[in-house]
Image (cartoon, rainbow, N blue to C red; front, side):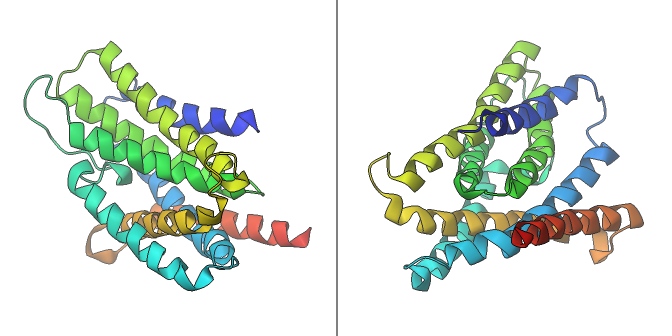
Length: 240
């Protein structure tokens, strides 16, 4: 098991949220560029790697159904998370009112996102997911701060969120090699659900990049870089 992957997943999410104590503005231009880059990167990785891998198994005729389930599941989760996965920050009123819906749906989302990493042979996906969690964690921390939670409490909730993707990664390793319940036959179907979630998240990020479907130059560069890095990894992987 590669410990560095767990560390990257954990610290990107945790430090991304902890940055709220250093960055006073919740409209950081850098975070928006990271979001655009990670959205494009996730979309490209999903198309280049996850979808072909999912359709390579014996149950490929059913994978499309599970992709649709994942897509619809993400729509359902966002009714509670309010788009925090996309780095959205909404104003919440009331001191110490804990946003249970946001926290639970965000943790489930992160757990599911960690699952494809068991088959991330060339390490492309680990960086896309980790980058994607930086603005999500920052948005979560911002919401908690707006609700006047103490610094210690915010750190605890960030720790809980940060551990979810590594936990999903750990469980997926057990599923893929059959050590957890011996249900490795269902792994590709689970990946279908994750693919549906990734498609929803990445396309929403790209469509929401700016008003009137116009993307400014810096965001366009971030999007092209995200796709470009994914393509480099794709061709490098096929060269071996």
